[in-house]
Image (tube, rainbow, N blue to C red; front, side, top):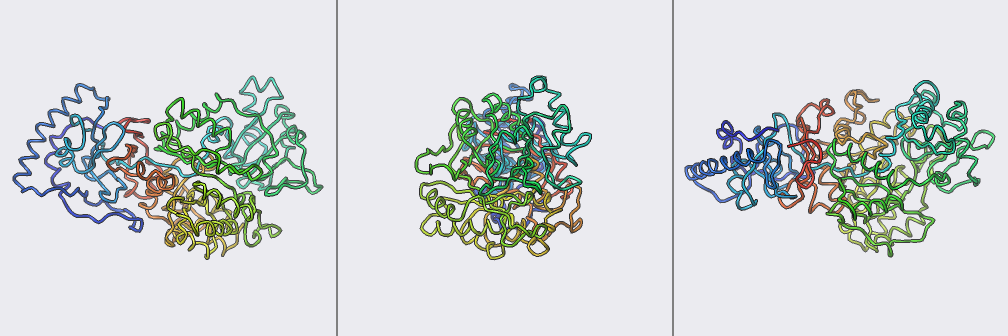
Amino acid sequence: MSAPDDSALRKRTSSLEKPSPKPPVSSSSPSVNTPSPAPSHDHPKISGSARWLLTASLVIAFGFLYTRWDSLLGPDALSEAYALCSREGAQIYTLDEQNPRAQCLVVHGSKFTSTGSLDYILATWRDTTPGHPHVRFLKPGQIVVPGLSDSHAHVLEYGATKQMPLEGTKSVVGKFQTVDRVRAYIQADPDILSDKTKFVEGWGWDHTKWLLEEWPTYHAFETDPIVAGRPIVLQSKDGHALWVSLAVLQSIELPDEVEGGVIVRDSFGKPTGVFLDNAQDLVIRPEPTYKQLQKRFASTVKDAHSLGLTAVHDAGFNPISLEFFRKEAQSNELPIRVYGMKYFDETAAYWGDSFGKIVRAGNNRLSVRSVKIFADGALRSGGAALYEPYADNPETRGFLRTSPETLNDVIPKFMKDGWQVNVHAIGDRANGVVLDAFEAALVKANVTALRPRLEHAQILAQKDMARFGDLGVIASVQPTHAISDMWFAEDRLGPERVKGLYAFRSIIDHGARITLGSDFPVEDMNPLAGFYAAITRVSPEGTSPHGPGGWFPEQRMTRFEALKGMTLDPAYASFTEDILGSITPGKFADFVVLSQDIMTIPAANVLSTGVVATVMDGKPVYGAI
């Protein structure tokens, strides 16, 4: 960003933004691929000569004031009231249907007060914004978008992965491979190295990326003298499997079976050290300290702000994380907006009528008014519940983690008690069962007031796609999952059923609302990675099983849909569209400055776009303006 200098700008502004009617942008609008003239607000018509004289007078007066204001504040100071403008025209994508693109935005305190051309915001400053005009300008090529949201993430778990990241390994053992990373982690921590009773925890292993695609076993830990004999618990990349050491395995009293889960066993029926889905609950780990949780949270927030995230939907508060966020919101202002989903434990008593919802606590930074229910497992681990057997494992159709009877019992109860119900469903059978439960529960309910969500909604039968729009159910999807899973998906599902996997365009065309997330740390936190995946359906290298044109390219989203899916749609999905999601006067001033125009540059260049600044409540939390 650069300091005010309007000597050349004045000659261009009137031609940049002349009043011209522009229809509002809607979710059915085509992708924004070319710059369009900046729309302007409707205001009383003034004759050309009178308007010129008025503008000239204002510019002389205001130009002196805001230039003087800048000199008093210094080059890096930001006043309580300021405008951010582009010299290149309408480079601010507001997501406001009444004024979808603008040259300038105006902030006072924590909220937007105006948008429009430079002429317009200066001429109306006294009517909209207290204080003197203070104008900053974007550098060439930069754009502004609303603050970005991730609709499905795991905040504290992401912070935990920074301790011992395991993603990217190609095998269980070998130099720089999984067990070798565990060894390096142990050796780097003197306390753990000297005490073999201390738990060792990590996240991110992915057996589908190993050269030999099979489940690991506890035996691998015992081959390394530094690692052997220790209590080790490693979470899989998708969060649906735990791999534990012999010391942990021997500490567990194992049942023969676990409903909604699997204890992986060898050909002799002996447990191998891998637990899937509900079976993971058998593994008891030490609770993290409050200081450890604060460290994890800070690590997550630092990365989130650097990538333009101002809000995250945490997909599963357990009692520990719920209490942590409640305390943080009470004692400090949360550095990022968190919309939490309270975890549903089918073995515990129903709590929907007794637990007090948290709504916009801590200066509008924390809400917990939704419940997270698991219907099934994951496709990667073979736990997604399918109507027909897996193509690569005909002996199983996956499994439901929560029975249809339980779903049909608790979903209406939670809705009656005013909770948003968000259900994890990946397989086509799981999605069908949950939609059945939603359909029955919504007969006498106001769907707009409840806004139920299907988290993931990955594999859908054709008959179920139409029900999204009919029922008003929100599809909370993760585009980066599509370009991760596309390499093994057809082998697992077969050539026909795979067409219903990550069918974003079909869901939208059936009238459903989509909201986008990453599922970090399962996938890359970067929201622009999700934007890229949604509009291209190719890998970062530009490839796919179907070639450079994309994996099932007919399912691509438009750029506008993708941007809306990480701004205004997440706000709607978290009941905050009145205060967040667009650059609209009266809403909180959360916005992001990007180094390139992601709405017009070649798709291959999207991932090279940098975040220049992330702003919350009008103040930069990353970078500067």
